[in-house]
Image (tube, rainbow, N blue to C red; front, top):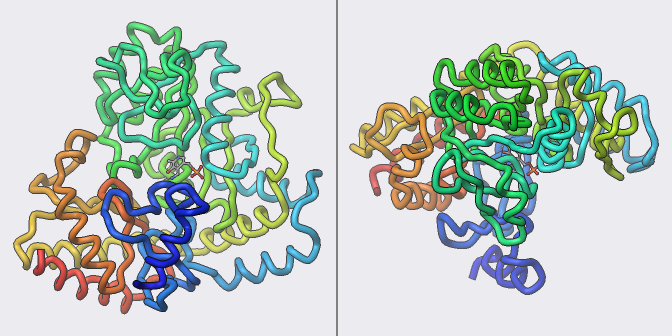
Length: 426
Ligand code: PMP
């Protein structure tokens, strides 16, 4: 048995499924998850000492590479002054001002300790602000595990939502309507019929939880329009896309401004951080200024703020995103050539530093239905082939991948060379 196999067996006795977040258990790809011992730059080392070129990056935060020396040094220096005070600090002002400067639509922001808290709070705020209950989300989107968001579509777009997890009351789920991502006509139809009841739309502006699907031209603009007409709040969930597809997130890239933005992952530099922010007149409804309650013992703690601020400084440097994007493009072109040479039906999609791998004959994937029609069995074999040769991809055909600026040309070339072998073996 490998050390990872031994640890996995041990973990299952005291941790449900052996993991603290389900996707880590490798359920969809099969096999044993690698237990990680340490990480540096583009690499992680597992408990058996294998070096892995990492394209997960802790699911997004490690855009500058693991254990970035400047982030580590800043956190070490901050730690001696105390880990958390539960009282305001100057650091939090610096963070808030930086976020307002970088993200086009944010005028005020509040910090949380996870992306889930950020989206839950944004939805409560939208409901409190509008006095309405219904929310719209899109199939294949993921916005954390808040009750209102663990809901799947009923029999049609206009019917009541059904809980997608036991423990979510049907009475609450009925207020969540699940529509088809990239289908503007359906959004318009639903708003024509019940726009006055809808508190908010929450959307990943680039969908990253059903592989990687960019918005089709006009989709985000339609969401903006129907919200303007109906008074609903437009929430861009940029937990993944924020500071990933561009310095100012997807809203900068596509030039559509939401009313509220949720952030996470990169903004914490690897520490547990989320944030939600947006229009001043909406944010002023939050407690203690307004009546909508939201709070957090560790929100804005000095270690998390220090790590996050250092990360924001690093990514604000000249050419960071040009480099990240061109590295990602280089990788994907190499993978495509390797697949073509092996005669494997394969296609990639990319937005900035995030990408998707699709085992399909389609030239382009715009919808959830198209994603679920891809060959997941082939993906799983590709995944394990890559992993056995030292390349760590997201352990699911439905997750986006991430490149970091710590990935060197040699790392990308090594990955492509390994992929050539693996494609040939499929
Ligand atoms: N929104 C999006 C778009 C996400 O990708 C995620 C997590 N992958 C979340 C929200 C939830 O964030 P967290 O896991 O930090 O709670």
